[in-house]
Image 1 (cartoon, helix red, strand yellow):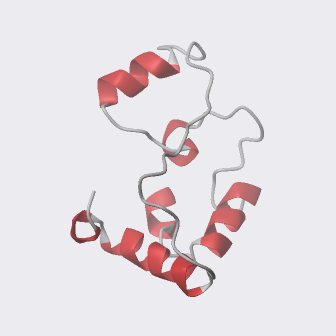
Image 2 (cartoon, rainbow, N blue to C red; image 1 turned 30 degrees about the vertical axis):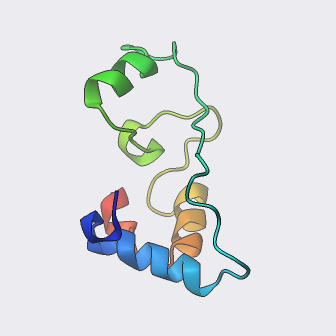
Length: 93
């Protein structure tokens, strides 16, 4: 994915994080891991992930291994609003 292919909210969120970050950039060859229970839910999360062809957040799926606070005003909502400067709030409804 290139910066040009990102949505405007994604670009704003990245700019917000970058403005508050220090040190050298992280090596872009590093990979991110997703931790989840592949057999949970109906259909199982792994099956749904393969069918969709993309990762969907807790805001989209309503699933969690912890607290379900991905709703306006919830703990996760407030946390993500702080770390991304509110740039993606409209997309988490």
